[in-house]
Length: 469
Image 1 (cartoon, one colour):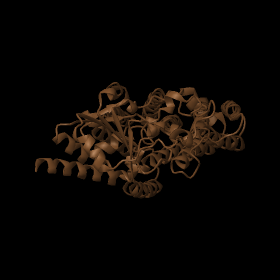
Image 2: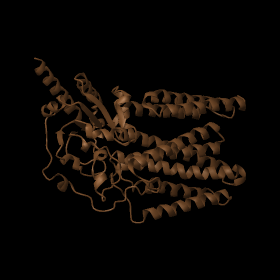
Image 3: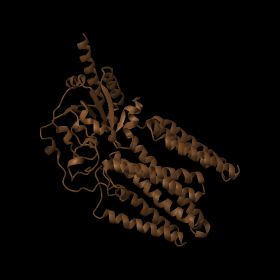
Image 4: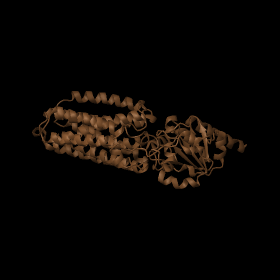
């Protein structure tokens, strides 16, 4: 296949990638956008394999079969609750693949600039640095999300300075390699430094900030792929990597604004530095929590004109999205307005709640983002919070010692009545008590999220039936 035809199909792939990203900007077009991007990647892969520069298909097909098998098993067996962990792993795999390409290319040229050119050697160095950081950083993020590692910030005094020194050292090694000095040993030192950096950049970040970290690591994997494209001279890899990198940075910025964090804090692993002592659970609750029952809550819902449902990670854990949709349908048949208030980082990754509700076929127009729903809470009769903790926690507004202080939250406490469906008073991923649970206008409905919503819908139907009789 001639170079002109290869580039023509690569251009088509790039157009499909851009269209795919455009489609992913709205839930209604997300599936179509994902399909467009997948077709674009398929075109790019097929054209690359048909290119005359391919020497042998044996290893390629073997790798494709192994990868496809692993991918299918992961995709079919993973639970929606573990989707953030899967995204973290996939980010790491992308970084690891770019790292492998860079090291293999370096070894193939034996290191001298004359063999690969100044640009190629710089690309190798940057790919090693970013790919290795993405690999180990994603592994740490996976460990925190899977609760294999503590969700709290982990580090040591001066870790930010340590990271800065390590980064300067890594860049110095890249400059040394680009100048034609040093060989395989120097490259391995760069690999080691980058792998350590991936760990020390992510461990100081607390679990509540993991959605931001996932977005950033996604960007890193794209940048690493783009750099690998320069090494291989592959145009479509450069374009696709650049698109992923740029969109990831934009998403990271959006997440930072949503959580009142700084981009510099994400980049240098200093998001969760605490400013003082936070309140403890005994001080917050102190016998003020009021437990309720589905029957009591159903009487409140019977007269409610507007109900806002606020989903969180607890909804995902209980797989309660379909039960919630059924409850909403019951309320709407009674003439009650039902809308959903979504925090951009509810759950453990951006858009987690949107995906769950879309799975239950909730109308996209009823999913209102935080900035749109917050002004309406004061005119809301009942808010039903299902497993959302940190994103409704008033400590973000009131406690300067809290690691979530300054993070914009859903102002559910302003509603006339707040119903919190939760198994217990255990803290959220940030490890903090929630004063909302002790408010005068809050009623706690303790139990499994799905079961409680089903019982609540049943009680509401019974009330309706008895009145009709």
